[in-house]
Length: 131
Image (cartoon, rainbow, N blue to C red):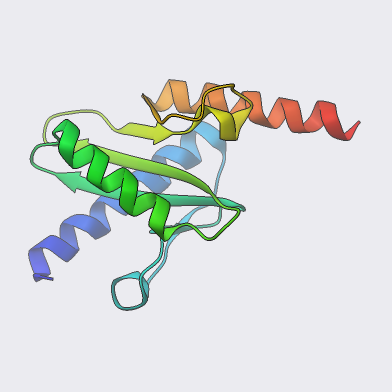
């Protein structure tokens, strides 16, 4: 992988870590060995596998390919989250609503507010079940 591409990826992962920290209070950090060993991009969100993509353009075909990669990076019981951003666009997230208490297993694309709503909904469900 070219140095410029690695640097773009590093910056993107930092952006997503900061965004999720600001909105959800998560303290995420980059997985430093991911390029050699494979695996998802950010650590610190228990049970969630976060894959980050930053490209000039993001076609539906690109997103489908990145989603498949995200699924492949997740260990058996981890919840997949794809974060991606095209140039001059906002961050978008692909999730499976069923992982967050929804009824739909098909992937859905949301903005940061939508992701936060699903995460909080799923957390609320876990609290209700455990009490």
